[in-house]
Image (tube, rainbow, N blue to C red):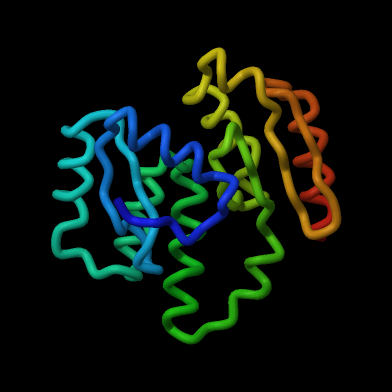
Length: 168
């Protein structure tokens, strides 16, 4: 077993996953550390096959990893477009201002504000298990956090409108 370098508060969860025998790859990320767990050996092998020959840190790597981690397609596309632009030396500050941090049941990603409704709707429908529903979705801007109950489309629409107005 490899000693994780990340958040020590997560170590008990890591130990549980390892003890339960979940398949994993290590290292999986661009830092050369970190575990990526799978539900089955087939999922693990599919991931290994998907990443075979893909250069770590490449746009393809980032895109593939986003899909494996279960992020919304719009968010993956936006993030990988920004990643590619940065690789080409282009300034992406204007695009970073169009994102909001999302934490839905521990799945954390950046959403592109114009696609927020579509992406969160997709997430709420995809992750609709009882466990996921009991936790709110947390939206994090530079200035504040907004907490919205899983499936509360009315408040999601209000937040989306506020964020759209702020972009103007």
